[in-house]
Length: 319
Image (cartoon, rainbow, N blue to C red; front, side, top):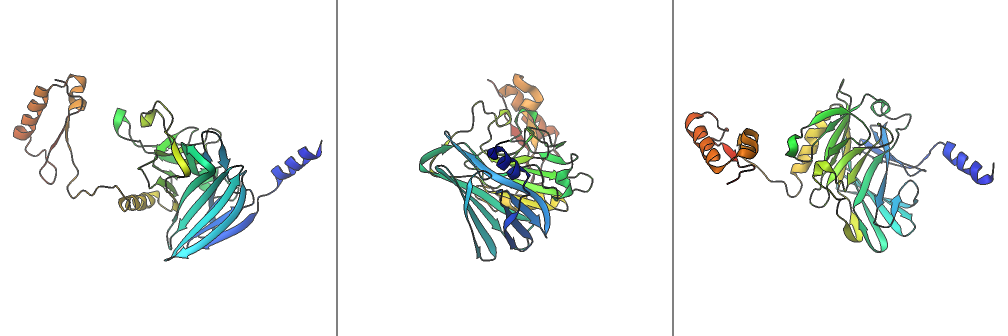
């Protein structure tokens, strides 16, 4: 056996070691010498992950890139972390924000090159096979994930399913134990530029990644996600947190989304009413809609929302 093979085996068998540990309030992020980052909550290991990005000509993975620096700064009680990785002509910057007394952290990545680059896939978090001391949930094959549809078209619905290679939840998911509801929330907070998803690995059911740049049948795309172009390209921001009850985590995620840009405020009751496609499919004509509207108005006086409105949805109306 040559020296190259022996060196490769030794590297493979070497136990990863923490080279930098950053603690703020409840959360600790351990940076390992294999460039994985461990998320710890109240001292307990949750799970570890790396980041990667693709351009139209190259890619960069923090596991194989050279880590150049880790910088921290605390501003108004929030810890900001920047880790910089370099591989050939690409630079990947990994950012974290940790607020005081929160069960989650925020993360995103930026990539840049020596010249203008193009990318249609950035992955701020790729959770690989769990560490042997990780939270028991991530070592189990019984974990479930909440599958959130991209939209409400084509009769899709929310579901709770075992993790399987390729299984996808759009924008947000909960990875949890349905026997006690403990689990992790991963969710995107930006929606203007990227289509986001959490996707199970093709190699192991216990591995999953947060992706900016999803494009598939459920997003109604026939082509890959479009490219972003520039000297520097930024992923969506994602939160990652662990909760004794994932329903609390989903509520917290919802509040964070409300505080973001582009979320419309609604002061009225939950809208409901009549949908032409659900009722008449492709046979709907204007006279059918008028007849349905008259019937609801005259004969279904109690078919109203709490503010007294009924909505008529013109879906697939033909003349």
